[in-house]
Amino acid sequence: MGGKTISGFSKLSKMGKIKWLVENFFKDPETVKRELASYLLANEEQQRILDGFSENTISNYPLPLGIAPNFLVNGVTYVVPMVTEESSVVAAAASAAKFWLDKGGIHAKVIGTLKTGQVHFLWYGDPELIASHADELSAHLITCSKDITCNMDARGGGIRNISLINMCDREPGYYQLMVEADTRDSMGANFINSILECCAQALPVWFEEHLPDNVPVPEVIMSILSNYTPDCRVHAWVECPVTDLGDFEGELGPEEFARRFYTAVRISHIDPYRATTHNKGIFNGIDAVVLATANDFRAVEACGHTWAARSGKYKGLSKCSVTDGMFKFELEIPLAVGTVGGLTTLHPLAKRSLEMLGNPDASTLMQVIAATGLMQNFSAIRSLVTTGIQKGHMRMHLHNMLLRLEATEKESAQALKYFEDKTVSFPELRKYIELLRSTVSAKSL
Ligand code: MEV
Image (cartoon, rainbow, N blue to C red; front, side, top):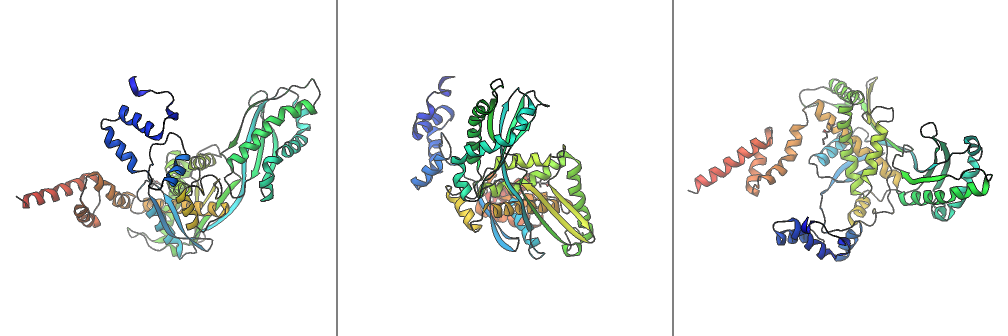
Protein backbone atom coordinates (compact mmCIF):
# COMPACT_ATOMS: atom_id res chain seq x y z
CA MET A 1 0.00 0.00 0.00
CA GLY A 2 3.05 2.28 0.38
CA GLY A 3 2.11 5.83 1.41
CA LYS A 4 -1.59 5.30 0.74
CA THR A 5 -2.46 4.36 4.31
CA ILE A 6 -1.56 6.32 7.39
CA SER A 7 -2.11 6.25 11.12
CA GLY A 8 -2.43 9.36 13.25
CA PHE A 9 -3.69 11.33 10.24
CA SER A 10 -6.21 13.33 12.25
CA LYS A 11 -3.37 14.61 14.47
CA LEU A 12 -1.49 16.19 11.54
CA SER A 13 -1.85 19.92 10.99
CA LYS A 14 -3.98 21.04 8.05
CA MET A 15 -0.81 21.63 6.01
CA GLY A 16 0.52 18.21 7.06
CA LYS A 17 -2.72 16.56 5.91
CA ILE A 18 -2.63 18.35 2.57
CA LYS A 19 1.04 17.49 2.03
CA TRP A 20 0.42 13.80 2.69
CA LEU A 21 -2.65 13.81 0.43
CA VAL A 22 -1.15 15.58 -2.56
CA GLU A 23 2.13 13.67 -2.44
CA ASN A 24 0.41 10.30 -2.36
CA PHE A 25 -2.68 10.74 -4.52
CA PHE A 26 -1.96 13.38 -7.16
CA LYS A 27 0.37 13.58 -10.13
CA ASP A 28 0.94 17.33 -9.71
CA PRO A 29 1.15 17.96 -5.93
CA GLU A 30 2.07 21.63 -6.11
CA THR A 31 -0.81 22.55 -8.43
CA VAL A 32 -3.31 20.65 -6.30
CA LYS A 33 -1.94 22.29 -3.15
CA ARG A 34 -2.43 25.72 -4.70
CA GLU A 35 -5.91 24.84 -5.91
CA LEU A 36 -7.01 23.57 -2.50
CA ALA A 37 -5.59 26.71 -0.89
CA SER A 38 -7.41 28.91 -3.41
CA TYR A 39 -10.79 27.79 -2.03
CA LEU A 40 -9.92 28.70 1.55
CA LEU A 41 -11.50 31.85 2.95
CA ALA A 42 -9.29 34.92 3.27
CA ASN A 43 -10.87 35.61 6.64
CA GLU A 44 -9.03 33.19 8.92
CA GLU A 45 -11.59 33.40 11.69
CA GLN A 46 -14.41 32.41 9.30
CA GLN A 47 -12.27 29.61 7.89
CA ARG A 48 -11.71 28.35 11.44
CA ILE A 49 -15.48 28.27 11.97
CA LEU A 50 -16.02 26.29 8.75
CA ASP A 51 -13.22 23.87 9.62
CA GLY A 52 -14.92 23.27 12.94
CA PHE A 53 -18.04 21.86 11.22
CA SER A 54 -16.21 18.74 10.11
CA GLU A 55 -12.98 16.80 10.50
CA ASN A 56 -9.80 16.38 8.46
CA THR A 57 -10.73 19.44 6.43
CA ILE A 58 -8.33 20.39 3.65
CA SER A 59 -10.30 23.04 1.77
CA ASN A 60 -13.84 24.29 1.14
CA TYR A 61 -16.22 22.89 -1.45
CA PRO A 62 -18.22 25.78 -2.90
CA LEU A 63 -21.76 25.40 -4.19
CA PRO A 64 -23.78 28.26 -5.63
CA LEU A 65 -26.24 30.09 -3.40
CA GLY A 66 -29.11 31.30 -5.59
CA ILE A 67 -32.29 33.14 -4.74
CA ALA A 68 -35.84 32.64 -5.94
CA PRO A 69 -37.89 35.82 -5.58
CA ASN A 70 -41.66 36.38 -5.60
CA PHE A 71 -42.63 33.67 -3.16
CA LEU A 72 -45.92 34.82 -1.69
CA VAL A 73 -46.61 32.52 1.26
CA ASN A 74 -49.62 33.25 3.48
CA GLY A 75 -49.61 36.83 2.18
CA VAL A 76 -45.94 37.48 2.98
CA THR A 77 -43.45 37.93 0.13
CA TYR A 78 -40.21 36.01 0.50
CA VAL A 79 -37.05 35.74 -1.47
CA VAL A 80 -35.99 32.14 -0.99
CA PRO A 81 -32.31 31.20 -0.62
CA MET A 82 -31.41 28.00 -2.46
CA VAL A 83 -28.14 26.08 -2.52
CA THR A 84 -28.03 23.61 -5.38
CA GLU A 85 -25.62 22.34 -8.00
CA GLU A 86 -28.40 21.54 -10.49
CA SER A 87 -29.08 24.03 -13.25
CA SER A 88 -32.70 25.09 -13.76
CA VAL A 89 -33.80 24.31 -10.18
CA VAL A 90 -33.76 27.91 -8.93
CA ALA A 91 -35.18 29.24 -12.20
CA ALA A 92 -38.00 26.68 -12.06
CA ALA A 93 -38.89 27.54 -8.46
CA ALA A 94 -38.87 31.26 -9.24
CA SER A 95 -40.96 30.81 -12.34
CA ALA A 96 -43.65 28.81 -10.51
CA ALA A 97 -43.71 31.28 -7.61
CA LYS A 98 -44.24 34.11 -10.10
CA PHE A 99 -47.01 32.12 -11.81
CA TRP A 100 -48.93 31.87 -8.52
CA LEU A 101 -48.16 35.41 -7.38
CA ASP A 102 -51.31 36.93 -8.88
CA LYS A 103 -53.44 33.88 -8.04
CA GLY A 104 -53.34 34.31 -4.27
CA GLY A 105 -49.85 32.93 -3.81
CA ILE A 106 -49.07 29.84 -1.78
CA HIS A 107 -50.95 28.86 1.36
CA ALA A 108 -49.27 26.93 4.14
CA LYS A 109 -50.20 25.60 7.55
CA VAL A 110 -48.14 23.77 10.14
CA ILE A 111 -49.96 20.64 11.29
CA GLY A 112 -47.65 19.73 14.17
CA THR A 113 -44.16 20.33 15.54
CA LEU A 114 -43.47 17.20 17.57
CA LYS A 115 -40.19 15.39 17.14
CA THR A 116 -39.49 11.87 18.31
CA GLY A 117 -36.83 9.61 19.72
CA GLN A 118 -36.69 6.07 20.97
CA VAL A 119 -35.00 3.97 23.61
CA HIS A 120 -34.97 0.42 22.25
CA PHE A 121 -34.71 -2.23 24.94
CA LEU A 122 -35.15 -5.92 25.63
CA TRP A 123 -37.07 -7.20 28.61
CA TYR A 124 -38.34 -10.71 29.22
CA GLY A 125 -40.75 -10.13 32.10
CA ASP A 126 -44.55 -10.15 32.33
CA PRO A 127 -45.88 -7.66 29.70
CA GLU A 128 -48.93 -6.89 31.83
CA LEU A 129 -46.79 -5.91 34.80
CA ILE A 130 -44.84 -3.33 32.82
CA ALA A 131 -47.99 -2.10 31.04
CA SER A 132 -49.64 -1.45 34.40
CA HIS A 133 -46.63 0.69 35.46
CA ALA A 134 -46.24 2.56 32.15
CA ASP A 135 -47.67 5.91 33.36
CA GLU A 136 -45.60 5.85 36.54
CA LEU A 137 -42.45 5.01 34.54
CA SER A 138 -43.16 7.80 32.05
CA ALA A 139 -43.66 10.39 34.83
CA HIS A 140 -40.45 9.23 36.50
CA LEU A 141 -38.42 9.55 33.29
CA ILE A 142 -39.82 13.04 32.64
CA THR A 143 -38.73 14.06 36.15
CA CYS A 144 -35.28 12.49 35.69
CA SER A 145 -34.78 14.53 32.49
CA LYS A 146 -35.55 17.88 34.15
CA ASP A 147 -31.93 19.03 34.19
CA ILE A 148 -31.84 18.64 30.42
CA THR A 149 -35.32 19.99 29.70
CA CYS A 150 -35.61 22.95 32.09
CA ASN A 151 -34.41 25.58 29.59
CA MET A 152 -36.55 24.18 26.79
CA ASP A 153 -39.54 23.98 29.20
CA ALA A 154 -39.02 27.67 29.96
CA ARG A 155 -39.19 28.42 26.21
CA GLY A 156 -42.52 26.60 25.98
CA GLY A 157 -41.12 23.35 24.61
CA GLY A 158 -39.95 20.15 26.24
CA ILE A 159 -41.11 16.56 26.53
CA ARG A 160 -44.73 16.13 25.52
CA ASN A 161 -45.06 12.43 26.06
CA ILE A 162 -43.11 9.28 26.86
CA SER A 163 -44.93 6.09 25.97
CA LEU A 164 -44.03 2.48 26.43
CA ILE A 165 -44.55 0.40 23.30
CA ASN A 166 -44.67 -3.36 23.37
CA MET A 167 -43.14 -4.74 20.16
CA CYS A 168 -42.87 -8.34 21.38
CA ASP A 169 -45.09 -9.59 18.55
CA ARG A 170 -42.28 -8.62 16.14
CA GLU A 171 -39.24 -9.53 18.23
CA PRO A 172 -39.33 -11.46 21.54
CA GLY A 173 -38.76 -9.13 24.50
CA TYR A 174 -38.54 -5.99 22.35
CA TYR A 175 -39.93 -2.74 23.81
CA GLN A 176 -39.53 0.92 23.05
CA LEU A 177 -39.79 4.08 25.01
CA MET A 178 -41.11 6.57 22.49
CA VAL A 179 -40.28 10.15 23.48
CA GLU A 180 -42.13 13.01 21.82
CA ALA A 181 -40.80 16.51 22.31
CA ASP A 182 -41.37 20.04 21.16
CA THR A 183 -37.99 21.60 20.47
CA ARG A 184 -39.40 25.04 19.56
CA ASP A 185 -37.15 26.75 16.99
CA SER A 186 -34.24 24.37 17.26
CA MET A 187 -33.91 21.22 15.20
CA GLY A 188 -33.41 19.61 18.58
CA ALA A 189 -31.39 16.53 17.70
CA ASN A 190 -28.93 16.94 20.58
CA PHE A 191 -31.73 17.83 22.98
CA ILE A 192 -33.68 14.68 22.15
CA ASN A 193 -30.63 12.42 22.15
CA SER A 194 -29.60 13.74 25.57
CA ILE A 195 -33.07 13.04 26.96
CA LEU A 196 -33.00 9.54 25.48
CA GLU A 197 -29.62 8.71 26.98
CA CYS A 198 -30.81 10.01 30.32
CA CYS A 199 -33.94 7.83 30.10
CA ALA A 200 -31.82 4.84 29.06
CA GLN A 201 -29.76 5.20 32.25
CA ALA A 202 -32.76 5.72 34.47
CA LEU A 203 -34.74 2.79 33.04
CA PRO A 204 -32.95 -0.21 34.62
CA VAL A 205 -32.57 1.69 37.91
CA TRP A 206 -36.32 2.31 38.01
CA PHE A 207 -37.00 -1.42 37.41
CA GLU A 208 -34.68 -2.35 40.26
CA GLU A 209 -36.16 0.19 42.65
CA HIS A 210 -39.87 -0.09 41.80
CA LEU A 211 -40.57 -3.67 40.78
CA PRO A 212 -40.31 -6.89 42.84
CA ASP A 213 -36.85 -8.46 43.20
CA ASN A 214 -37.59 -11.42 40.94
CA VAL A 215 -38.45 -9.16 37.99
CA PRO A 216 -35.69 -9.05 35.34
CA VAL A 217 -33.87 -5.79 34.55
CA PRO A 218 -34.19 -4.44 30.99
CA GLU A 219 -31.25 -4.37 28.61
CA VAL A 220 -31.06 -1.12 26.64
CA ILE A 221 -29.91 -1.78 23.06
CA MET A 222 -29.74 1.82 21.84
CA SER A 223 -31.16 5.30 22.29
CA ILE A 224 -31.48 7.63 19.34
CA LEU A 225 -33.86 10.18 17.87
CA SER A 226 -35.98 9.09 14.95
CA ASN A 227 -35.66 11.10 11.77
CA TYR A 228 -39.18 9.99 10.93
CA THR A 229 -41.23 12.88 12.31
CA PRO A 230 -44.77 12.50 10.93
CA ASP A 231 -46.08 14.81 13.66
CA CYS A 232 -43.72 17.60 12.68
CA ARG A 233 -45.60 18.27 9.46
CA VAL A 234 -46.62 21.09 7.17
CA HIS A 235 -49.23 21.45 4.46
CA ALA A 236 -48.71 23.81 1.49
CA TRP A 237 -51.13 24.35 -1.36
CA VAL A 238 -52.11 26.56 -4.27
CA GLU A 239 -55.55 26.82 -5.80
CA CYS A 240 -57.45 28.84 -8.36
CA PRO A 241 -60.30 28.52 -10.83
CA VAL A 242 -59.13 26.37 -13.73
CA THR A 243 -59.85 29.22 -16.13
CA ASP A 244 -57.33 31.43 -14.28
CA LEU A 245 -54.53 29.02 -15.14
CA GLY A 246 -54.39 30.66 -18.57
CA ASP A 247 -52.91 29.19 -21.72
CA PHE A 248 -49.73 27.17 -21.98
CA GLU A 249 -47.12 26.50 -24.62
CA GLY A 250 -48.22 24.18 -27.39
CA GLU A 251 -51.67 25.83 -27.61
CA LEU A 252 -52.77 24.07 -24.45
CA GLY A 253 -55.83 25.62 -22.86
CA PRO A 254 -56.35 25.69 -19.07
CA GLU A 255 -58.82 22.77 -18.91
CA GLU A 256 -56.58 20.52 -20.95
CA PHE A 257 -53.56 21.61 -18.89
CA ALA A 258 -55.37 20.88 -15.60
CA ARG A 259 -56.41 17.42 -16.85
CA ARG A 260 -52.88 16.54 -17.98
CA PHE A 261 -51.35 17.95 -14.77
CA TYR A 262 -53.83 16.01 -12.60
CA THR A 263 -53.04 12.80 -14.51
CA ALA A 264 -49.29 13.31 -14.11
CA VAL A 265 -49.67 13.65 -10.32
CA ARG A 266 -52.03 10.67 -10.27
CA ILE A 267 -49.40 8.56 -12.06
CA SER A 268 -46.96 9.32 -9.23
CA HIS A 269 -49.45 7.66 -6.86
CA ILE A 270 -49.69 4.57 -9.02
CA ASP A 271 -46.14 3.88 -10.11
CA PRO A 272 -43.10 3.90 -7.77
CA TYR A 273 -40.69 4.50 -10.67
CA ARG A 274 -42.46 7.75 -11.46
CA ALA A 275 -43.08 8.51 -7.76
CA THR A 276 -39.34 8.46 -7.08
CA THR A 277 -38.59 11.02 -9.80
CA HIS A 278 -41.64 13.08 -8.88
CA ASN A 279 -40.43 13.26 -5.28
CA LYS A 280 -36.84 13.90 -6.38
CA GLY A 281 -38.19 17.00 -8.09
CA ILE A 282 -39.86 18.10 -4.85
CA PHE A 283 -36.62 17.58 -2.93
CA ASN A 284 -34.73 19.60 -5.57
CA GLY A 285 -36.49 22.57 -3.99
CA ILE A 286 -36.70 21.39 -0.39
CA ASP A 287 -33.04 20.34 -0.10
CA ALA A 288 -31.84 23.59 -1.62
CA VAL A 289 -33.53 25.68 1.09
CA VAL A 290 -32.65 23.19 3.83
CA LEU A 291 -28.99 23.45 2.76
CA ALA A 292 -29.06 27.23 2.43
CA THR A 293 -30.32 27.48 6.01
CA ALA A 294 -27.74 24.91 7.26
CA ASN A 295 -30.36 22.37 8.22
CA ASP A 296 -29.92 18.60 7.91
CA PHE A 297 -31.00 17.69 4.37
CA ARG A 298 -30.28 13.98 4.86
CA ALA A 299 -32.72 13.89 7.78
CA VAL A 300 -35.37 15.79 5.84
CA GLU A 301 -35.01 13.53 2.78
CA ALA A 302 -35.01 10.28 4.76
CA CYS A 303 -38.14 11.40 6.58
CA GLY A 304 -39.91 12.52 3.41
CA HIS A 305 -39.34 9.19 1.70
CA THR A 306 -40.62 7.23 4.70
CA TRP A 307 -43.70 9.47 4.72
CA ALA A 308 -44.11 8.82 0.99
CA ALA A 309 -44.23 5.09 1.76
CA ARG A 310 -46.53 5.33 4.79
CA SER A 311 -49.37 3.43 3.10
CA GLY A 312 -47.03 0.50 2.50
CA LYS A 313 -46.44 1.64 -1.07
CA TYR A 314 -44.07 4.43 -2.15
CA LYS A 315 -46.10 7.26 -3.71
CA GLY A 316 -45.72 10.82 -4.96
CA LEU A 317 -45.80 13.32 -2.09
CA SER A 318 -48.05 15.90 -3.73
CA LYS A 319 -51.74 15.73 -4.61
CA CYS A 320 -53.83 17.43 -7.27
CA SER A 321 -57.58 17.83 -7.62
CA VAL A 322 -59.72 19.46 -10.24
CA THR A 323 -63.20 19.80 -8.74
CA ASP A 324 -66.09 22.10 -9.64
CA GLY A 325 -63.85 24.17 -11.86
CA MET A 326 -61.18 24.64 -9.15
CA PHE A 327 -57.59 23.50 -9.56
CA LYS A 328 -55.83 22.60 -6.30
CA PHE A 329 -52.28 21.36 -5.93
CA GLU A 330 -50.90 20.46 -2.52
CA LEU A 331 -48.02 19.00 -0.60
CA GLU A 332 -48.12 17.66 2.91
CA ILE A 333 -44.76 16.66 4.28
CA PRO A 334 -42.92 16.21 7.59
CA LEU A 335 -40.06 18.72 7.89
CA ALA A 336 -37.90 18.78 11.01
CA VAL A 337 -35.87 21.97 10.74
CA GLY A 338 -34.56 24.64 13.05
CA THR A 339 -33.77 28.33 12.92
CA VAL A 340 -31.69 28.53 16.08
CA GLY A 341 -28.81 26.41 17.28
CA GLY A 342 -26.77 23.95 15.26
CA LEU A 343 -25.09 25.50 12.25
CA THR A 344 -28.03 27.77 11.44
CA THR A 345 -26.41 30.76 13.07
CA LEU A 346 -22.77 29.63 12.89
CA HIS A 347 -22.54 29.33 9.13
CA PRO A 348 -22.17 32.92 7.93
CA LEU A 349 -24.23 32.41 4.78
CA ALA A 350 -26.91 30.35 6.52
CA LYS A 351 -27.27 33.26 8.89
CA ARG A 352 -27.75 35.57 5.87
CA SER A 353 -30.22 33.11 4.31
CA LEU A 354 -32.32 33.25 7.46
CA GLU A 355 -32.03 37.02 7.58
CA MET A 356 -33.21 37.17 3.94
CA LEU A 357 -36.27 35.19 5.05
CA GLY A 358 -36.92 37.68 7.85
CA ASN A 359 -35.35 35.53 10.60
CA PRO A 360 -38.32 33.15 10.68
CA ASP A 361 -39.26 30.82 13.50
CA ALA A 362 -39.05 27.10 12.72
CA SER A 363 -42.75 26.88 11.81
CA THR A 364 -42.47 29.70 9.28
CA LEU A 365 -39.36 28.11 7.80
CA MET A 366 -41.28 24.82 7.47
CA GLN A 367 -43.94 26.69 5.50
CA VAL A 368 -41.43 28.38 3.19
CA ILE A 369 -39.60 25.10 2.56
CA ALA A 370 -42.82 23.23 1.78
CA ALA A 371 -43.88 26.08 -0.51
CA THR A 372 -40.57 25.77 -2.36
CA GLY A 373 -40.97 22.00 -2.74
CA LEU A 374 -44.49 22.55 -4.06
CA MET A 375 -43.37 25.19 -6.56
CA GLN A 376 -40.49 23.01 -7.74
CA ASN A 377 -42.93 20.18 -8.33
CA PHE A 378 -45.43 22.48 -10.06
CA SER A 379 -42.76 23.75 -12.40
CA ALA A 380 -41.46 20.27 -13.26
CA ILE A 381 -44.92 18.87 -13.99
CA ARG A 382 -45.95 21.98 -15.91
CA SER A 383 -42.96 21.45 -18.19
CA LEU A 384 -43.44 17.70 -18.42
CA VAL A 385 -47.08 17.92 -19.52
CA THR A 386 -46.49 20.82 -21.92
CA THR A 387 -43.13 21.28 -23.63
CA GLY A 388 -41.11 18.52 -21.91
CA ILE A 389 -38.28 19.46 -19.58
CA GLN A 390 -35.35 19.28 -21.96
CA LYS A 391 -36.12 22.54 -23.72
CA GLY A 392 -35.77 24.70 -20.61
CA HIS A 393 -33.33 22.39 -18.86
CA MET A 394 -30.79 22.27 -21.68
CA ARG A 395 -30.95 26.04 -22.06
CA MET A 396 -30.04 26.39 -18.37
CA HIS A 397 -27.42 23.69 -18.79
CA LEU A 398 -25.91 25.57 -21.72
CA HIS A 399 -23.53 27.48 -19.44
CA ASN A 400 -22.13 24.25 -17.98
CA MET A 401 -21.69 22.79 -21.45
CA LEU A 402 -19.90 25.94 -22.61
CA LEU A 403 -17.56 25.62 -19.64
CA ARG A 404 -16.85 22.01 -20.61
CA LEU A 405 -15.99 23.17 -24.12
CA GLU A 406 -13.77 25.90 -22.64
CA ALA A 407 -15.67 28.49 -24.66
CA THR A 408 -14.43 32.07 -24.47
CA GLU A 409 -16.71 34.86 -23.35
CA LYS A 410 -17.25 35.86 -26.98
CA GLU A 411 -17.98 32.29 -28.10
CA SER A 412 -20.41 31.86 -25.19
CA ALA A 413 -22.27 35.05 -26.09
CA GLN A 414 -22.54 33.93 -29.72
CA ALA A 415 -23.71 30.46 -28.72
CA LEU A 416 -26.35 31.83 -26.32
CA LYS A 417 -27.73 34.00 -29.09
CA TYR A 418 -27.63 31.23 -31.69
CA PHE A 419 -29.45 28.71 -29.47
CA GLU A 420 -32.06 31.21 -28.28
CA ASP A 421 -34.73 29.65 -30.50
CA LYS A 422 -33.17 26.21 -31.06
CA THR A 423 -33.11 22.92 -29.19
CA VAL A 424 -29.83 22.63 -27.31
CA SER A 425 -27.80 19.43 -27.16
CA PHE A 426 -24.13 18.88 -26.37
CA PRO A 427 -23.23 17.53 -29.86
CA GLU A 428 -25.02 20.46 -31.53
CA LEU A 429 -23.28 22.95 -29.26
CA ARG A 430 -19.88 21.35 -29.86
CA LYS A 431 -20.48 21.46 -33.62
CA TYR A 432 -21.41 25.14 -33.36
CA ILE A 433 -18.33 26.06 -31.25
CA GLU A 434 -16.04 24.09 -33.57
CA LEU A 435 -17.54 25.94 -36.51
CA LEU A 436 -16.95 29.29 -34.81
CA ARG A 437 -13.35 28.35 -34.07
CA SER A 438 -12.64 27.09 -37.58
CA THR A 439 -14.11 30.27 -39.08
CA VAL A 440 -11.93 32.42 -36.83
CA SER A 441 -8.76 30.45 -37.66
CA ALA A 442 -9.60 30.47 -41.40
CA LYS A 443 -9.95 34.26 -41.24
CA SER A 444 -6.61 34.67 -39.50
CA LEU A 445 -4.74 32.69 -42.21
C1 MEV B 1 -34.99 16.77 -12.38
O1 MEV B 1 -33.96 17.07 -11.45
C2 MEV B 1 -36.32 16.67 -11.67
C3 MEV B 1 -37.48 16.20 -12.54
O2 MEV B 1 -37.14 14.97 -13.17
C4 MEV B 1 -38.66 16.04 -11.62
C5 MEV B 1 -39.86 15.37 -12.28
O3 MEV B 1 -39.69 14.58 -13.23
O4 MEV B 1 -40.97 15.62 -11.77
C6 MEV B 1 -37.77 17.18 -13.63
